[in-house]
Image (cartoon, rainbow, N blue to C red; front, side, top):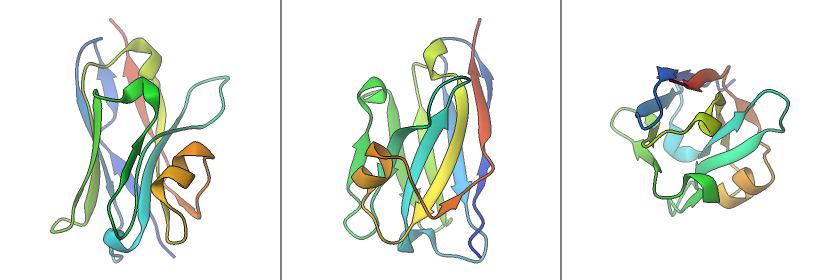
Length: 126
């Protein structure tokens, strides 16, 4: 059973940066489409950024374009989400998701996946 482990969340001031990491011990993440999805209190889960297996195509929701970057490090079997210029509205629990059978765009646009991590809290506040 694939288990996803997120890390890197925390408290940061507006304009700051964080890097989230997603790992899956014993599994090869390059075999999966990987996504970062978030859920703020009282809101629905939202696809933030996703990267497809195979061609590596990426998807970003409009509110994070230019500020966030998703990437794979296959040598470390880890997927990252670099978040720059953070805003208070980025505050949420961020989940890593993995699925072999969908594209990154599909995972992010209609948030769904076969596997989910436990989530990591990101709080942007002064």
